[in-house]
Length: 130
Image (cartoon, rainbow, N blue to C red; front, side, top):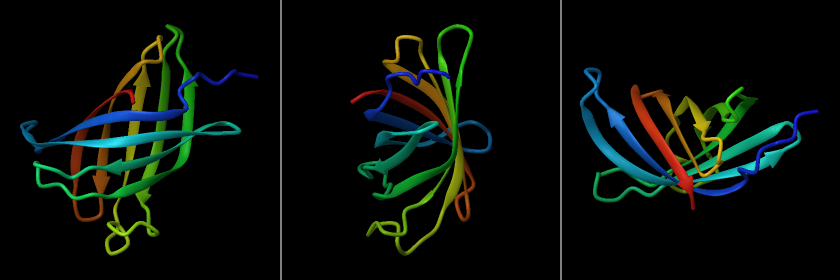
């Protein structure tokens, strides 16, 4: 039995949305909550909108997979979709895939995400404990 890493709780997420040529389209911030499950963690991501023109939204994860890496890091992969119960996302749908690699000290992670269903974009993700 693998012992789960201590990554539950709130994380501050910073995202950078990229154009097809890799140029930065805009940057955004969100709260990322990691919720323990019997086999790993589920995620709740709540974007903050703000000056970048983004809107507030919330997404929930599905099909999460957490893998211990030989160097002491942890790799979390998951699908996500709009939360239909949230005011800002009830009127539109989106879904995507994300991956985060947590540093061995479990204080930060970096990764990528891609979003589908109307906004076909690639994003760089960085998180730190909130």
